[in-house]
Image 1: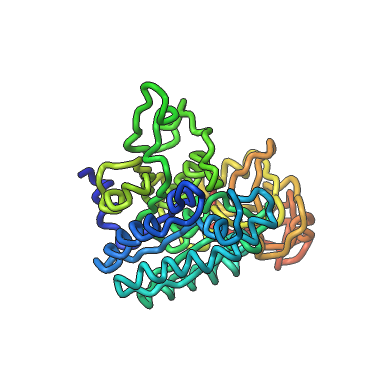
Image 2 (image 1 turned 90 degrees about the vertical axis):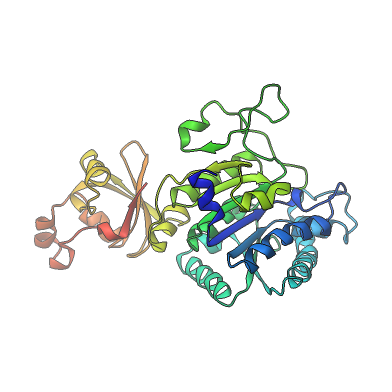
Length: 371
């Protein structure tokens, strides 16, 4: 077993995400036998001393049967109705299945808005930590009943990655109906399984455009994006078929292992880099861009050429190069109105023109993250 796979096998805290297609039968309805098989894997891991968080799709699929629908609805209102009916059925099935191992589950419903608003993000993280401390298995799902087109995660892949970074998981396992990442569509002649991915260069020339199943909403693209997000925060990711869940969690050579490309930041900076909904932008001159990227310095007003949008002090903002490229994100030290008056002035000039309260950095180095 490789060192990276061993690290997955020894992961103390693990987030597992399962898609709708892995929990449903041929008719698109919830298959409780498949759900039970997954719980057997996770229940044994939890009883064995590992902390497990499950990010599950399936609420809409679980509502298809009770509502007499022939297939997954495409209309948003019907999706919300199916989720409302199916969520209770889904959680009940998990409650019964985990009870076989003497484990209690806790339902956590999230929307994208919960992960882009700083206060909501912190509340979600603390709630998950509390559940884990109490020995509860969090069952996390997107809140499809109130979600709108603008705040959909996309088959929970990105949600799982954000959860993994928020709780500083040691590993994230993405379970799907495809057993790994391949060099081409798995049913194509000559397609080969990619065992490990160490960085973006390993993905060059690989076709990941195929959509997910008719029951799910995700595809390989959403899974690659989720893996990139999690690995950038130091989390190992395994993409594997749901039928290989036990082997994936045990660190065996199945699926595709994505190596960490970054390291865990503080939770506050993780949120800023991965999930924050910024309120405006600050355009920097070339010198300021070099200072941030090279020396990782604080942002000084002298290097600012333009203020975009309306924001207050303490709100997250994008830091942009002259060509519009995103360089960094930070928590503004001043409002947009104040920053507009400060732009282009040296620290000494700020004190002379605007007063000593303004004679400091626009964004302190501790309050920004270079992307």
